[in-house]
Image 1 (tube, rainbow over the protein chains, first blue to last red):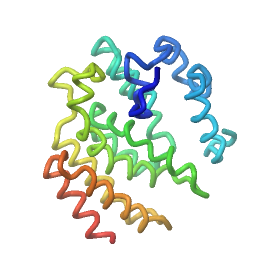
Image 2: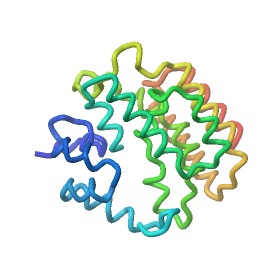
Image 3: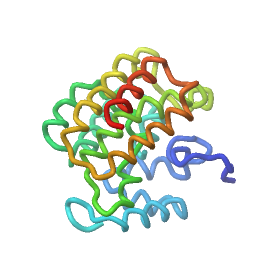
Amino acid sequence: MIKINSKVDDFFDNTNMVINPEEMMAKRQDIKDVLESMGSVGQVGSLLAEKTSHPEGGV
Amino acid sequence: MLYGGLVQRSSSRDERRFLLDEYQQIGLKFVEPRVAEKIKSIRPEAYWTTNKTVQEFLNAAEDHLDFTVAELWNLIYAPALYYHDIAEEEKAGESSFIEEDKPKLKEMLMMVKIGAEFLSQFPDEREALRIKQLQFLLKSFKAVLPSQIVSEYQAIIEKYK
């Protein structure tokens, strides 16, 4: 269950809220992969990333 | 923020150090080289606290994203975001630093000073708004921040308002 007063960083560092820590560690070089592995929370990050062009081009 | 979690949940000092170095490389990748060099003088454990601020995340909603400007504000805000709830995070087991590795106040002050020093060198059409944001942060967090950090924030506001 997601606490109402959760902060964004809790999804990355709170042991009760991180869904798949091993996967996050393994995929850390590709943030798109990490966000995909985070389910609906990760979708929010992906949508934000699409808002601005990356300096290297693409998302 | 991802590296914030990886470092806080890491099980060994060696792994933490490895991740901290990786985080610094990623964090400085698109930052102007002069600024990046100066930031490298900050101990990685202290620089790591910038993962809490992720100004790139907020600035990405603007028309133009300047990674150097975002990084300067990351440096300025990091101590506030770290100090305002570190006691709670430690209680919740969300901090794995041993005592000697924890970010030190003098390092945090140095980060704020570096951010403030370079702000005037990078044109930012939203500077006035960011100063208002800093004023708001100070109003909200003043009671839980070290007095030296508060003084540094007040100096920035005075200089740029």
